[in-house]
Length: 351
Image (cartoon, rainbow, N blue to C red):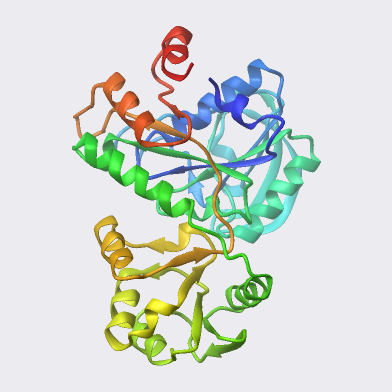
């Protein structure tokens, strides 16, 4: 089973998102590049923010570099083009700005190493991806940076590969639990009522918080963000309230403060753009569900596969076969350890 088999012919844009630094995300990206090259599939590559550095700035350890093949389309910031030893042909200097200069779209003329530093928001990433498709990419892969899971958003890519591994916890069982929880968030139920969806899109686009009451009566609260505003939001609920729409992130404190001031939270559904906007520890998530908190999204995230890395830069590791087998049993999507060799091994596990 390969990543390209899961992607090609089904999706044009895919993101790779890590659950932590050194979860193996860049290894996955290099594997996709290798598989695509072997099958004469043209890739487009970019990143949300800066990633792909030769040294991990968090752990000060060497990390896999991004080695691109001839014909690949790359979108990266102008100021770091000189850090790349691949020979590049500039196709377009875009209007998308970063702290490292405008995003430049290039075609790789000779294999080599690159750093990726793409735009920092969803709209611009989507725009860059469309441009790379126009320039001939069969698939565009967005490399998600640490703590920037927004590249998994449905508005940016059609599907996502989630990278996880031993770096998440020294406990294998804990890593599996946290990964399964992240998958649960990515698969949150979508709002079905069209009028509610239309209002939610408006709130998310404009920012702030909105409430939908019975009879589909809608109202915006005088808030720019939900952070530290849980009590205000809770005070705005009535027995007729049915939905609360959050334009930004939904965090533990907001929910705790909200349910502390009103019993009406049990009758409403909390709506966020997608599962990347939920930042609630797993234990609190379970507590909230028991208390009747319900969260929906405008769009569920489609996870194609989960990649696992049994090694942690701190010096400990899991038994690779045991880790792969347990993770596969816990999840309903393909689970791949790209460092394990042998097609027979993978066929035995996945066949």
